[in-house]
Image (cartoon, rainbow, N blue to C red; front, side, top):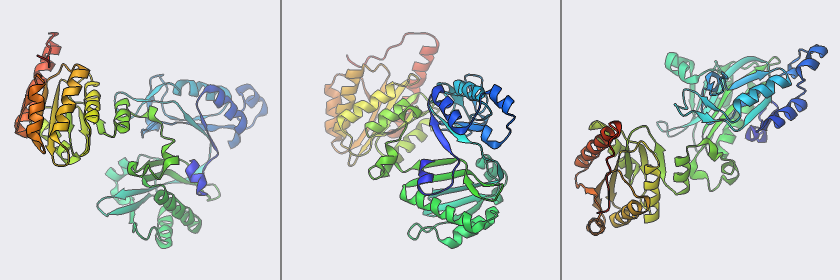
Length: 416
């Protein structure tokens, strides 16, 4: 919201709050009265209520369920007591939405904003689109709803305008979108649409979504809510934006991977994967599933990983208690196989890894890598064929899984 204000895009008055004391202070600032004073004053104007929004990295907040029993992550409050009660049920609690999965998302901050009365609500977004090779502006006359449902049930309701990434958004297209969305004052709306694109472009966004972009009772434009995604590769020139990154909202393993320079995404399976190259990583995961297994993660160590990074990669994998086996698949082009091998040996020693490790190495210095593994006196299962390695990892994961279910204490000891 601060970024929208910086580009002179109208937003409701807002304050970020992190505890109940700040909620009370914000109520005073907004003119929200205690219940008894409100009853005595008889005020019913829009200045007597505000909205509390959970600040979590997940969509579908409006329909979310809290571990505190509260329903909904966007709540209108009418007095101080109600604001404090809602804040107590949100702050420090987990919300579960369609996007959070079973783990939910911990809420540490709330956005308190003045309530605006919208005459009409629309949807507007700018997103990078691979198929068109640049940004696409997407609009819909219906706002404040789940746009995915509209796209599925009524795709013709979406208005899509490709934007020339070199020339940027022109006034004609901005005005066309404003007319299509049904703004009372399309010329004014077009100005704000152009500013939104300028914000998208200058901030290295991959997504800028306003849902809803509203018209008040006078037809004035107000951006009621905003979601922005930023290109991680632009962190070096967007230092101010990336300094605001809330690491507490992200998976702890993802955070560690990011700081170690690794591309990691946790999944629900039980076979840990360590691969170099995103394409090879996805192919490896596909093979695991083809043979009846389920990958526990996507992990691309890239082409220039060090032995220390390989060790950290293993640390991330074994931190997942679901992992029953690990498959290492390296095709050494830029990446040297001997570096991987040294990292495997170091990780197995330092982390005392108990689950079986299947290793498939091909490419640069593969013979040196095999020698390192052979002289390490560790029971690491080597396979030269990727399909065979995938089958092996699935079988071993199943063995470990069955043993754990039967409460049999089976250990896979790496050192002789």
